[in-house]
Length: 269
Image (cartoon, rainbow, N blue to C red; front, side, top):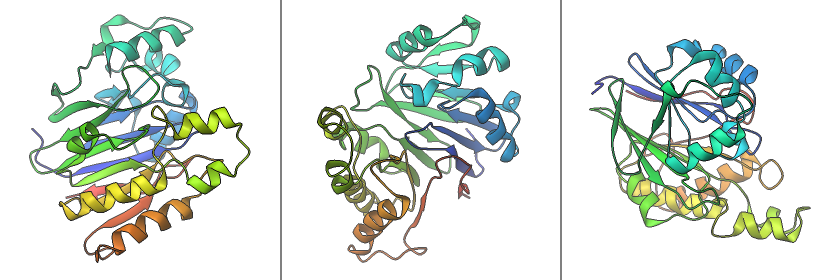
């Protein structure tokens, strides 16, 4: 298992598309491949990473904002891909051309997989995509997790976040902005329902609880373009942390992932 530092670098994050780079020593793992292959390669290049240097691609679920680049990317670079069995069905259904089956790997929630010295554990997430999951990544020194597209903070998700040093956590929508916004009622119900997304308030409560239990670094991700603002999400989470008498940059760090360009990495060393 890797013994060095580990970093989380959102290449882009939001309802428009998602891709996150996790690096430790020589191991580089991509989580999700939204937007386009061109955009994905551009943003990897911006953070000094050649796609051929990736050890693996982990897919959380088969919604388009997480896999729209994968069809071309998988055929062009042939990087091993990991996804749950249900997610693989969605990936194959969305392909315009088949890629080599040699790179397909099924990942089973709660069963660890070793990728280049990083121990990867998928965990089930409550979302309206069958087989949806988040990922916990462990080295001998640090544990980090990526948890987006979660309708509510389930015990399963929380248990996998607990004990992590750093977490990229969904802060998808502000309740007032959602319910007073332009979306049709059925879509508002879907977002706020048991298969939707995590709101700022629930994200804030989770961050405060995790921080009191040892998590020091937080990155907010997957913000809705229509129903949230970076400053609103950050303010809501920051308030919850400060209300616990926790001090920014002493007890915790807090950042918001950018929607279109790479965000400064969360580095644990």
